[in-house]
Length: 104
Image (cartoon, rainbow, N blue to C red; front, side):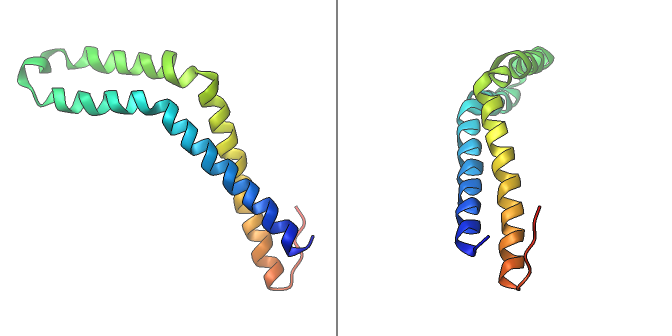
């Protein structure tokens, strides 16, 4: 492969990784905001006696709510495929610059 083809494949992997991470974060934003609100409410002594209920609801939301949506699974798949492609083609580009031709 020429360096131009390697750079195109590297860029595609980079875009897949960024896209998957961005949309995965946007999908999980509600759970992250709920965790931040929990920290603020925990400082209030009046709500501290039922802290375990809030953690149970947070865990159930993570397991049965946002994390099980197909969009999150697709985003994670895109992120993982993009990350693997990005790393492998980075290695191939560096090897090509030093005169080696790696095939994997």
